[in-house]
Image 1 (cartoon, one colour):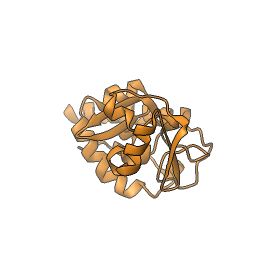
Image 2 (cartoon, one colour):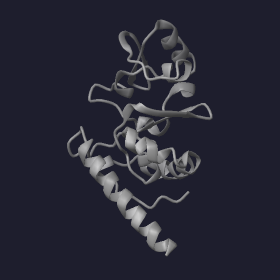
Image 3 (cartoon, one colour):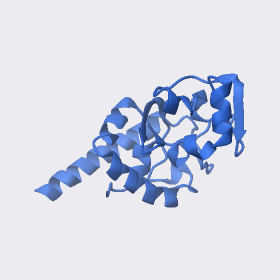
Length: 170
C-alpha cells in the first residue's frame, strides 16, 4: 500500500512539475544550456537583491544603479552597501542551483523561480518556482536539498528542455 501511495504521489508531483515547467518556460523551447537562471539580458534573480534575503529576511527589488557583474551575470542591489558585500563574498550570497528552483532540482528539473518563494537554510539561499511549490519543498527541506545537490551535478550542464522529472529520493 505504501508503494501505491508513493507512486501516486510521485505521479501527481511529476504532473504538477511538468505543468509548472510549461507554464513558467519564459525561454520558449530552451535548448540552450544555462547553468545559471538569468534573463535574456543576463540579469540574475529577476533583479532582486541577493544580499537583502540575508540581512533583511525578505525579497527586495534591486536598482540598476547598484549593480555588480559576477561571472558574466548582472546582480542588482537595493543599496551600495549590499552591492559591496556581494562583491566581497559572492559565494556567500549566490542562490543555490544557479538560481533555479530548489524543488525542481530535487526532481531533476531546471525550473524558473518566483523571487518571493525563498528560504535561507544553513546560510544558503534557496528559491522555488511558486508559493505552492515552496510549501511542498518546506515539508522536507533537508531531504530536498540532499536530492537536489546530487541531481544538480548531472543536470547543471544540461538544457532545461531536455530534462524529465525523476523520482524524489531523499
